[in-house]
Length: 178
Image (cartoon, rainbow, N blue to C red; front, side, top):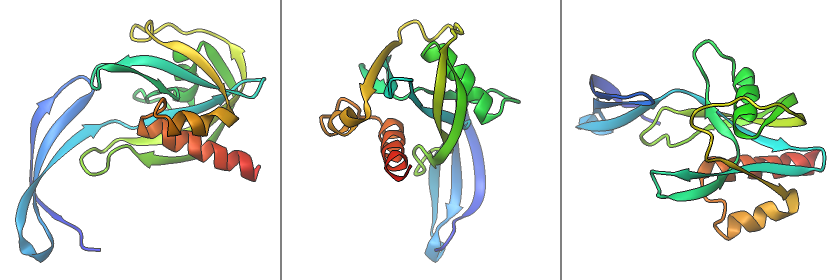
């Protein structure tokens, strides 16, 4: 597989959560072209399962798509924070539960065609109530579903974001193997 050589890179925007750069590259065959790259820090995504074997999902409004989505809990990894510590913090902020068991299920790039973000996928179990308040979580509601409902929620489009679909399907395969 031919790699592209970066000839130049220019930062055109720097915000709170993302940076946008334009790279000039030499593609295979020697042709020069540009790539628009969204730089985003790595994140965590969590399949959380409670004592009743219900999967905890969060429903929240997403401005980019102008609707509320049903998703697995997820969030950024703070500077100096391990992915596992981010799982515990995000779980407390978004669901009100602290996981006492955190297991890595894998990971994936969210949109590798134009973004750098990598999501570490975890399974969180042995949950106990423990709330951490964060300013951007007041509009989140918690929804519990059985593993048997997951495929139907994905097929119907009720769960329609890539990280949740990837995370939940990975969990279902993990559950079958276990």
